[in-house]
Length: 110
Length: 112
Image (tube, rainbow over the protein chains, first blue to last red):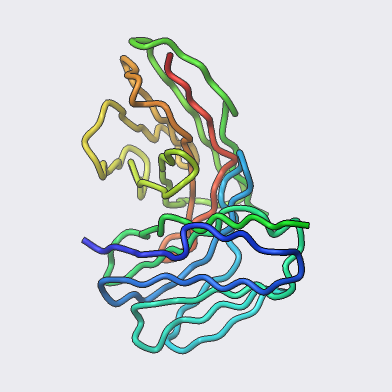
């Protein structure tokens, strides 16, 4: 079945730093989604990507759909304390169900 | 606008007791509905999905079952809980044909 490898698993950064995380797939995806989950809450959709090479922004967040269709990247610029949480990538391809990465836990030191 | 309600938020149940978690969606018709389980704040595992009333697909063998008695209602059940059923359960919905899933607030289940 389809598998996603999300990295890094965790990040410890200073407030104001930029953040980068990525997901790679063992197969081609038609859709990449990025979610953020706050403690004790359900994941919230941040960005949706539908075309290879697509670059989409949502405020300080920017995500890209890799040209090979097997990877995606999420960048957060000038991090702030409310960016803390777990970020998940999710992908779907070939009529399969949405597959989630294992998450990147972001911790920000003030 | 669409909203999804999931309850209860937390639940502590003894081993061997039954379980019923409920999820309802408002503001949309004929959604796809999903139950996920999340262990230790990490990845999401799809348990069940439904494309319509009475239509349930199970993704993994387990001690749980799901039902969809109404278009916008999805229920997760167990006849006898196991310790290993503890976790964070999330309900989600999506529009037919769309990959974008929208999640409820989750239920933290602790089996003791």
